[in-house]
Length: 376
Image 1 (cartoon, one colour):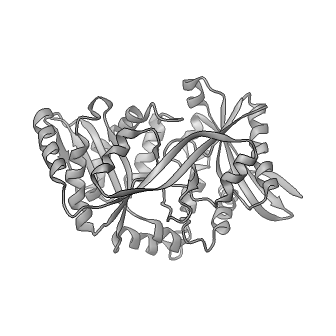
Image 2 (tube, rainbow, N blue to C red):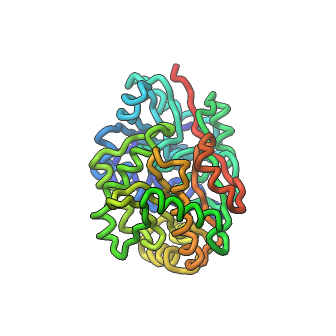
């Protein structure tokens, strides 16, 4: 018999909630665990400012006293008000290959949604676009990344059996790093610099980039991504949260800021050495020795880079501005010894983003999906 229990959103219980996923994928060579502390903080209302505009409940499924599944139910009131929708999101979902477990978890989400007046269930999604989203439907034999979901191939089979349909898809590309800056990109970058007066800003201090462009960076994300699927605008408190969370971790050589003649931010590209191997070796824990594996992933030999964020002001898109990113970052990638870049998820209809990979050898190696279902 399956029992679904709501768990308190406390660090102790949320660690068990997060650990279930890590245990479920123990030994899987493609799964990349999250940092347990990060997921615990994301789901903790005392830490994550997303709770200013969102509501959340977490549930776990048990057979006897053995955990067999988990899910988070999230209502993003900000997105619902903006879109006029009444959606409840499901995220952080994992389960054994037993349809009664997946059914029980998702019915619990639907039940709470119904009580709150919601009319549709959609996911996997988090609180914001900076959380993991999209269920893997292609690429089960490909290494995951720290910013994406990995799941077993039976997950989408369960969703289809439970009456869920496609809402949108994301695609991911593995891109080969060239031996030098393509002549075309160099030429376009120089034209854009002359025409608009743009320049590349680099930094030697994380404190400096936080103070000068930290807030502007996430405000640019709000502006650029506002029309994307289920986008949740970041509030001032969330922006400060992400500045503190992420900008202290970055390798400054892999951050490119494009600024105008008045030093206003018009574009940004942020990359990071792949943390996949380090996270697998650490099993999501910093202590006692997890920090060593993570540091080795950041500083040690690594042939893969994750493209975490690219944002160009909407009015400048399609005008060659992203050539400045390639002009600056490709030499950095070569210096680091990177051979391949992970694009991370891009909406399948976002041809503007996908067209930029045409200049390099690439292959679409993963696809993920958001599902939706009306609540009856």
